[in-house]
Amino acid sequence: NAGVMQNPRHLVRRRGQEARLRCSPMKGHSHVYWYRQLPEEGLKFMVYLQKENIIDESGMPKERFSAEFPKEGPSILRIQQVVRGDSAAYFCATKTGSESGELFFGEGSRLTVL
Amino acid sequence: DQQVKQNSPSLSVQEGRISILNCDYTNSMFDYFLWYKKYPAEGPTFLISISSIKDKNEDGRFTVFLNKSAKHLSLHIVPSQPGDSAVYFCAASAEGSNYKLTFGKGTLLTVNP
Image (cartoon, rainbow over all chains, first blue to last red):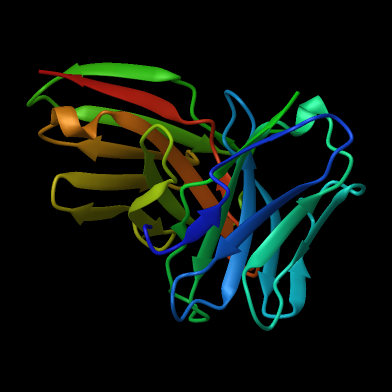
């Protein structure tokens, strides 16, 4: 999983600020998934993107959260007006387009909201 | 509603013995199951998977068993090694779900030397 790059690894925000988390897929991977892990919980699916398209955002909170995967550059998960409940580890996972491709996870971005 | 359940938050075994981690699921649409291993401050690493058309898959020291009628799977590690100490997550996906994984809460395995 070392090939999936996430930054920042740690991010501290005050309530009301914006958080931007970036994910650069492994070479050759065109599918990006974002997961969130709250303390003492498993990973929860948030959104699935391919280049320039959101395929499935059924796990995204309806407000304040958005994601994109532009033609050039990393995928970005954006959280506006953060609240303390947004404090979590956010993991990006990527795969190739093939049906049998495995998901490779990044090391995560840990968001702390003060 | 938790569709994938790992009822044991932790498990402790002696080095060289067998580790058995259990996982139950409720969604009958799940047809692909995976185990991930996670060290602190790292992302999950894929360990082993099994399709619902099989009941066993083996890879070295790791074997996953699937009992579809009981909606239960287990991961066996034998022999256990101290380096196996980590959190193990069970995950499942359903056909047509865009490979969207549903994870359990994890089991912390500690292998004592």
